[in-house]
Structures are given as structure tokens and as C-alpha cells.
Image (cartoon, rainbow, N blue to C red; front, top):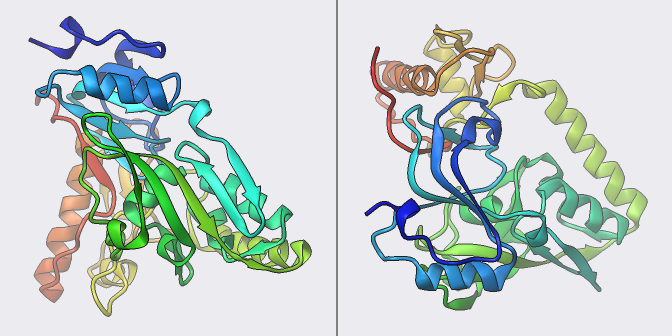
Length: 301
């Protein structure tokens, strides 16, 4: 039995054979067997409670750090809509839905004179992904401002996780893969809005100079190994500008892979693996993928 044959009744929407390449920054990859957009948290919880346990389930955000393989994603892909994107300020705390853009949360904090969340302006994607990956840049990360998160388990049960429950580590958490973040609470410190905005703009300026802004990319490709910078290892291994098909290693920042318009997911992934091979060969260091890869490979021609 496939998911499309026995889907629970929902108030949200199902879309069959949804083109995921239209939803991810790489603009490459296959389709979702079923794409589910829940109406709200209760709708999502009801779906999780009613679905057969053998339904494959994949959760995606705006696809800023995601590679969908060319054969597509079997089962149900869940994408949280705008109803999960509300952002509210309460004193020095900000409550944000999992579908809220990281940049929107940073701007809301700046407007309220809350310092500490500026780094989120430079993190592409949504709060849900930022929680899952303990996202960060320029010396700050989610765990530094985290208070609690609301999550649904694989059967629709609701939980509130503390920082200890999250088990934050470098670019990951200890939360099970089938748990879905629906909301988070962050806390910063008081500052003048103009000062917060100034720091945020300085961060953005640094990012625009050092990263391939506007390119079809998946953000940082590999995690930094302990005591090392991934981009430097990639450059020293001679991979700057390396190409496979219509995919290349960025000339601006070596830890970014670029789709120049016609690259397949297979070409992008093969390029990443070739980078890993060269770094391993030259420095005996295993680069670990930071980009999440989902789905099945396409058929070889």
C-alpha cells in the first residue's frame, strides 16, 4: 500500500507528484509522491496520529540547505505553510513558528530592540530548519538564544523541549528525525533598535562579499571539521571552480556548490563526493555533509 492510497482526512492540502525542485534553492531534483501542507498544528497532529506507521515521512522547509535526489521522495513530504510562520514579541522574548523565515525573526528582534538574534539575518531558511541544525554563523548559533521548542512526535503527541532536551551540538540536535518542530521561543538582551540594525547590516554586508548570494545553491555544503575550515580544505585540495555537468564549486566561497541552471541533483551530489574524495586523499580528513540529502537516485541514462 502506498501513502496516496490510504491518506488520512485532513483540513490542509495534498498534492500528488509535486515538483520539489520548485521548492528548493538548488532548483534540482525529483517529485514528492505526496506533498502535504497542514492547515494548522492540530491538523498536522491529527495527520500524524492517523497515518499508518509504515508511511515514509519527510519534512522540508524552504529548501535552503536541501538536495532532493532526481528519483524523488517516496511517501509523504510535509511542508509547513504560512500559518506556521507567525512571529510575536513578549519583552525580550520572541516566539516564532517553525515556518517563519530566520531573517524575519532577526528583523522583528531588531525592531523590538532585542540583541543576540542578529546572526539569524545571515542564516537562510526557516526556524524549523535552524532548530534541527542548530544553525549559526559569525560566532553565534541557535542554542545561544534558545529557551524552548514545541514539537510533535511521530504519532502527533505534543512536547515542549528545553535546551537539555534538544541536546544541541555543532550543526545538529539530538531530537529524533520524525519529530516535527512547530514553534520556538528565543530570548535576547535589551539594546537600542538602531544599534541592533547596524550590526545586522554589517553582518549582511560581510555575507554578500564572501558568499555567492543569488546563485542556485544549498548554502554551506560541508560541516567544518574540528579545528579546520571546510572551505580552506576544499580550496587547498584544488577544488575551487571544479565542475561536473552544470554544477560547480563556487569561485566565491569553496564550501558552496552551484547549479548553473541545468544541473541534475546527481551531478551536484557527485561533485560534492568528488570534493570529499580529494580532501580525504590529500589531508586524510573526512568532510561531513551539512546539506541534507533526501529521496532516491534517478535512473541512469
